[in-house]
Image (cartoon, rainbow, N blue to C red):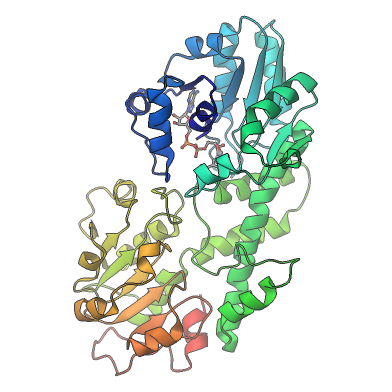
Length: 449
Ligand SMILES: NC(=O)c1ccc[n+]([C@@H]2O[C@H](COP(=O)([O-])OP(=O)(O)OC[C@H]3O[C@@H](n4cnc5c(N)ncnc54)[C@H](O)[C@@H]3O)[C@@H](O)[C@H]2O)c1
């Protein structure tokens, strides 16, 4: 995204990766991830000759004034950020530096990393450099829009020349000069983790409130609207669901807990946010087990949505993956559909005969004993309930994203369970021996996760 967008404003950009296959695909105009609009913009930059891809670090370093580091910083076993990729880049670029460079860390890294990398590079090169923290805030699924029209660009540096250079690079994307926030390198590093930790906290918070609403017979949607109207609170990131996933929130919350712990701080809120989310990811699977019993042998479930959010094919830490594992372990057969993420999800379940991935949402539903919805893709919002009714063996929907109105589900004669709202019970008593219902006083039955 960074390479493509910087090229789109006229810069010459060389993208480097150690993954030769990825580089070949990129050079041929094939984007290895699905992100709306990215592939087309990337192809245009390749065609214009402003963007190229290589595995040759030396060539890229010699030709570049600014070097962006955007490698992965995955979690170690204890949750702390693994910085070995960033260190590898610093060591890898040093031999090719033949004059001064601005080095920009875009990867999400714990506070103090910029200083450590600066010290490391200082030992490896005699040439002057400036090491800047410039964290990335884009949202997967809307990354292009976020890069082209950012809420803010954070530049962590005290070097006026480096700050000027980055300000000029970002100038075409920012609406007002106030969008660029210059601060210390350490503050910039903390801003990134704090932003993600705060957003994750809102999600875990509203999921907890959803439990209380369900247990007390209140509709969480009304509560969200009520509190969201307060400008101090706002309505964004207040949707109850199956928990946050993806490559950022889970790892960044855990990494911040480790940063806190090394600094001698407690981070009790962050620990609770993480624990709550781990539990929430299985909320839908638990509902299924309560409804059908612990042994799901002989039952088939359709799953709609595998990506951790809509408009991406990313299944890293996706709640759907946990739900599939849990239900398959209980003996269920699963038929899964996602508009974009089937290939990535299938790669996580090689040769598992109980789990099928299909190309059509209604193929997934055919003959199933229930439908689970894990991702709020637009195409799931207005399905054909007539078709669903005729294809489902048992007309039960477990909606992890609260896509449908309760009144609609009642009218459509569906048995319906969602997050933080009363369940809609079957219009007639199910004749299946597995059917247990979630209790006649629906709310408590549905939502104890
Ligand atoms: N994905 C997001 O939405 C997002 C948003 C904001 C910030 N970030 C941060 O950006 C960073 C990258 O995230 P990602 O999701 O793109 O990761 P990713 O794992 O999808 O991609 C990282 C790439 O770096 C390459 N790489 C690893 N070591 C290398 C080396 N020594 N030299 C060259 N290339 C190397 C890998 O081959 C891979 O292609 C992380 O720190 C992440 O926290 C990601």
